[in-house]
Image (cartoon, rainbow, N blue to C red):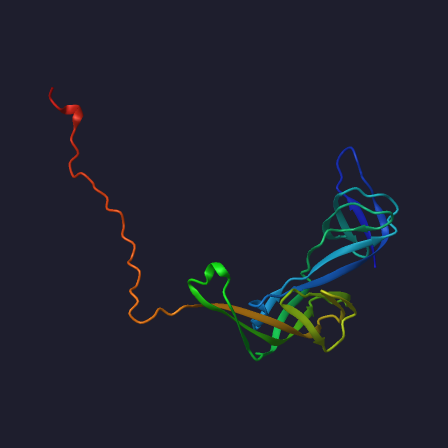
Length: 245
């Protein structure tokens, strides 16, 4: 694809104009999960994109730029750039309105719970009997559906999944194009007015801790409740200013 780049103009200065510049759209969807959203039936997501121009003939400073459609000669988009690096120029990342993204729950399998008991720390032993730790691993399968809302193909949309200490990647229907834990990436090509999918399985580790308090022996009196300090208030405080001498 090729485009014409124009700067903002004023009376004194035209920064640059470049015609027939080769460019591409870089698109991505980033997936972060927690224990709560991993269990949701559906999550609406927003992708982002930037435009990357190659062989720009002039150094471009950080500025706003106007991108024209070569065939129509009309502005296609308004964007910002942090400036060119050599012959390469890219715009800032912004929301991608040309795709519709839904993250759906496929299956949720609750794992077997294990229970471990530990003694309380020394400063809690007067109150606590023990610490109970319950752990389990749940297996969750989700499907990301990306719909192309345009009349042209979308190539190389990047889906990036990020692990954390409790959520780990297990497998996928289509192997990631790149594995670099804790990041996993897929490249998705989508035909016009069609949808692309990425289905994957995650392992969720859940830990819950309970403090088990000591039972008081029969007949042990309960500690008395705290009493509020009584406050004394005079109903009619004397008026010393009006007292006769």
